[in-house]
Length: 186
Image 1: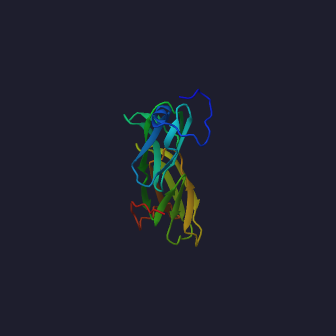
Image 2: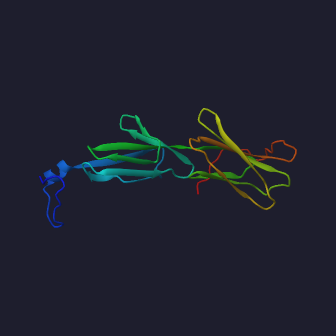
Image 3: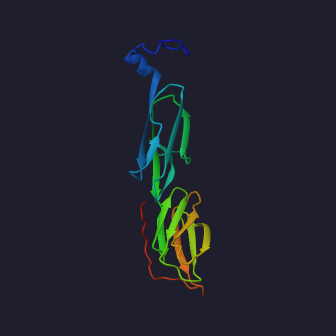
């Protein structure tokens, strides 16, 4: 083995046993989706910084990074650590449940939700609410609907697991002509 900090010539061949002893494998799995992308896995020299990154596919949210035994490592989509030994992590994702009333569809993309409506009537208001898994409301927002405009965007808070969108007429009564629970993938 070479001294720590020594630099090898670019054309020098390293023996397999020396390579295996000085590197670690960083692997990942995904849970909850087949469309997630994880960057940063592979072989690293012991002591090097490892940076893994992932993002949730449309209509899903990132839950967190987990050890192979199921313990939570982090809920941040960026994970950094020092390569000391072989490492296996799982990036977990969960669908965002969408409930709509009087709305054509809701599309989730990253930290935004786009609500598409049929042709709005004068005096109607579009409401958008987000909730945790146990039903606690995270926020509610509204936008006055404009004649001819059929697409409205709302920001999603972190930890959202369920959203609902509904239209109220000028009199404050719910419009229930098209109740559904669907997600449209982009």
